[in-house]
Amino acid sequence: MPFRDIAGHQRTLALLGGAASRGTLPPSLIFAGPEGIGKYTAAIALAQALNCERGRGIFGGDLPDAGQDACGACAACRRIARGVHADVLVLAPGESGSIKVDQVREAIDRSAYRPFEGRRRVVIVDGADALMPEAQNALLKTLEEPPPASVFVLVTACPDVLLPTVLSRCRRVRFGPLSPGDVAGVLMRGHGYTPADAHAAAAASDGSIGRALEGGTEDFADARDAAARMLQGVAASVDVRRRLDSARALAAGRASSDRAELTRRLLALSSLLRDVGVLLSRADHRGLANADLKPLLDSLLRSFDGARALRAFSAVDRALEALDRNASPKIVADWLAFQL
Image (cartoon, rainbow, N blue to C red):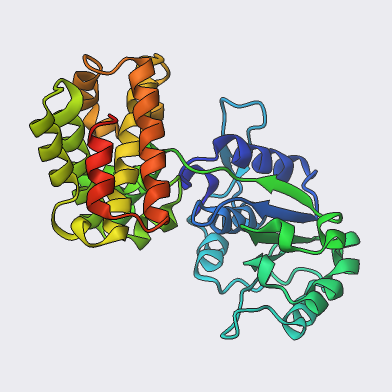
């Protein structure tokens, strides 16, 4: 997948493409950031950009670091995408959950030779935090003085687990969480989600496509629906009975006995309140986690000012803490109904 087809990270990817086109790419890199945001995909895209047979693509043309991108269609790009290119080697944890020294030594031996069919040999260590200490030590000299025409990319969500001596020899490239819109777009384009399900999963994903895919689509959508109904129920009413009805609706079904389900609904409630705060502050609407529910969010603005939105957001946090301390889901929901 070329840089241009990756969701988000435009400035970071343009920086990599610019360095590749100018020949200033550091030979030892760490791609660091949360799980499931596209770091490994970016490493594959870098390998394609370095070895594309056409190399005519330009990524990030409106950014100062715009540079080289792969075509994504030539034989080299296709083989790299399938994992069968002779000059692109991927190391990953085995059945033991670790990357052992023998795997690393084999990669070092292969990297010592000139590229067989491409311009650059690329070694990608996916899940680099799984490298055993002796495997990391075996890498040290190679990371400090990589063979000519070789690039090492260590991909990890936990860079601080790596030895300080490894960290000091690599240039760290930071990848941040994706925007909810980017996550929703990937879910719709690549995984067949409906717009409503995609936005619901994206709102609960914390910027991670992997996390969005881990949860059940219906669970995310149901949680958000329940949270939205509660907010509507308490928004413009101080009636005690209506607030208790809203609490029962929030804790209805599985949530009445399933702590995880109520937690999911509270997180959805927190996401909606955050979006209310975004609208109140007149920030860029592209930052909304629940952009598809903007009409609902706009209607809540009639009842929530900045102070109330902040108090409600804090109350949801306290409710989540109470659940963690084993409080009754019903009591938590009833209490929350009178805090919003």
